Image (cartoon, rainbow, N blue to C red; front, side):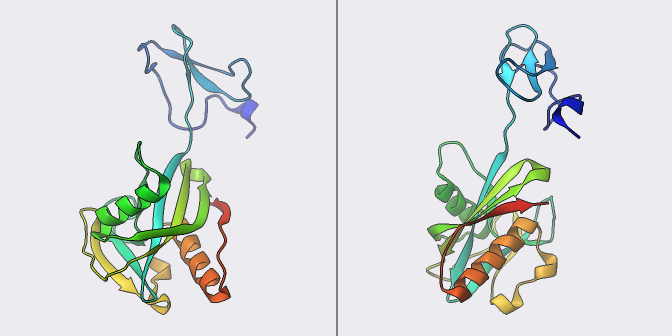
Amino acid sequence: MTDSARQRPLGRRQQFCSQCGHGLRVEIPAGDYQLRYTCNACATVHYENPKLVVGCVPVHEGRILLCKRAIEPRLGFWTLPAGFMELGESMSQGAARETLEEACAEVVIEDLLASVNVLSAGQVHVFFRAALPEPLFAAGAESLEVRLVAPKDIPWGELAFTSNRIALEQYLLQRSAGRHFVWTGNSI
């Protein structure tokens, strides 16, 4: 479907202005190229942009730290520690915070590994390489279980998200090739 054929902007449906509370209309604002919600009263344009998810591939002595999700979406599936970035933090700080929250583990964030555009969710998932200096971890509030796994024991069929599979595949591929680069691409 082309932008001109859509009846409303991508993203969540909005009805009221967050600035003044009046109703919204759908239009292409002057100087823009796609539909936006615009306030009928104060003319505020409401932009909705992708959400940023940050995470890491924590490694201790060749084994990777994975978390089994205790929350939806994908309750009971395995994931890398990751979550929505908060205001006031950098991407690497967010990845470290998410690891602490989900796995009660302190990591040393290293270089950027992958940036995955999750178009269907309106998100960008960014993963870093990370060192887990000590094998100290536990299930946080959002995890049922946390464990270190050897690459041969990664539960590929039980991973929560395609972006996790991409990050793990890239980590292992780059490790075996002996070089680091940032993978970028799209996920369904």
